[in-house]
Structure formats: C-alpha cells, structure tokens
Image 1 (cartoon, rainbow, N blue to C red):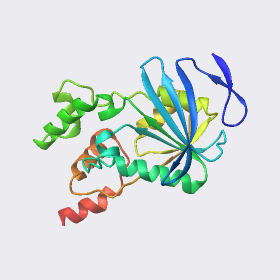
Image 2 (cartoon, rainbow, N blue to C red):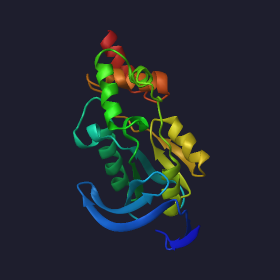
Image 3 (cartoon, helix red, strand yellow):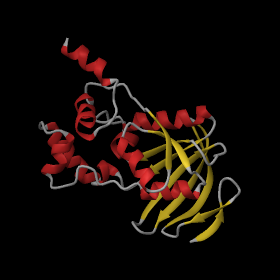
Length: 221
C-alpha cells in the first residue's frame, strides 16, 4: 500500500488494486461536483465517484449506485434506477456535501447488459426478476461492493449515511470496513411498468419499500 493526499488534505492509505487516476471538476444540472476516476486493476473496470462539497470522515451522505444503462441513460421504467440516481445527486447537492459512487460492472445486478436484457424478455413472459436470472443459470445478485469500500477509503470516508433500500449494501459495506451510521430510504413512486418488479425486490430480495403498501391497497380496492 502507498500513501497519497486525500480529499481531507490528510494522508490516506491507497490500495494498489483500486487506483485513483484523475480528479476533475464536473458541473452538472444538480450542482458542481468533482469526478474522481479510478481503475480497478483486479476486475479491469473503470469507476467514478462524484463528490460534492468538502467530505468529512464520518456520517457522509453516500449513494452506491449500480450501473444501469437502460434506466440511467434511456429512462427505462422497468426499474427505478434512473430516478434513484437523479434523486441521489440532487439530495447530495442539497445537503451541501456527499458522494455518489457509480459502480460499473454492476449491470443487471452483476450479470451484464445482454444477460439483463434476456432476463427482461423472460419477465415480459411472466417470470419475476429472480426467476428470470435463475432460468438463465445466473446468480440472483452477483454484485460485489469491495471496490466501493476502497473508493470511500481513498476519499477518507470512514462512516456513511447510506442512501439505499437494500440491506445487503449496508451489510457489504460494514463487512468491508465502512461503518453505516444510518440507512436513508430512497423511495421512488412506482409506475404501472415497474410495480411488479418492485414488489419482487421487496418480497424476495428484502428491499425496504414501505411506500408500495399504499399503492397495492389502491390496486386491490
């Protein structure tokens, strides 16, 4: 391990498997961020963290956002990913500081873009998102959050307020040495196209989505 000057102006340990390559200002519609570019030597992925304001070491408002081309770029309503990314960036800017770690290699909960599209085709035929992955002989969730933890470590972040509905993200960060002071809900109003998908995430993947109760009550009434 080597040492480098982190965001806080202090020396922080830099793991050689995830290397910081560049930092550049990145003005966005949500505010003026800084983009920190990393290369994951272990997996060969390029990663980015968008940082707003001056980060402290503790209780940093944080989003770990899994790459979703269909939702983030194309505005797909099959999932809520694009809206979650926009909301997270807006909330970080509104809070005055925070970080959104955009995790490439996480497409389709880690199975890749083409496999995700194949799974979506099976869902259109009636399978849920869990059944579709299994029907393709793929894991339900293949994501690893070790690179996110190492990026946060490089940024000098020791504990976070994690914007997520997924308890497994919290567990993964803690397992990799980042404490989670609070899990902040990131609830997006459902639509007709994603309500079944969201119900599956709640019922089979343990996502905390209490706002679905009112929607389902209305549907069943």
